[in-house]
Image 1: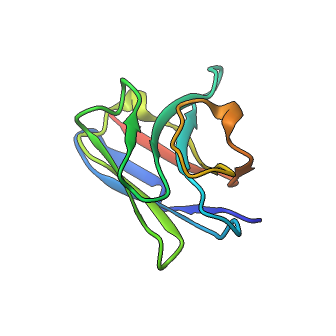
Image 2: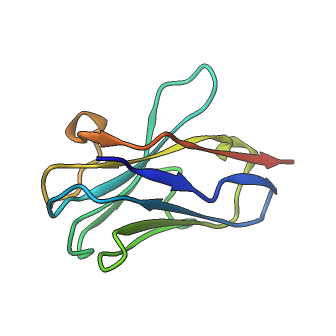
Length: 121
């Protein structure tokens, strides 16, 4: 299983980015986004169930980020709006071996390589 995250880059504060995560897991998997800034622990950002009917957001993402998915394309997206310098991190997508979404990184089996998001002030 290989997950490929893309869409990161450099953006000014207040701007937007859309991250994508492509890849098949061979089953109906929930997906999540996590991020890790230098010197900090990995942080939960958002998660979505296989059906898309259940979504969770971390406190830092609520009201600004939107997670979605297109199962026909085997892709998951993270629309990030009103970006702040503290959103700067490497963003990782992950997949579970189950359909239900989760906030916990330990529940995810498959991980992508990460995409860098840098927000300048």
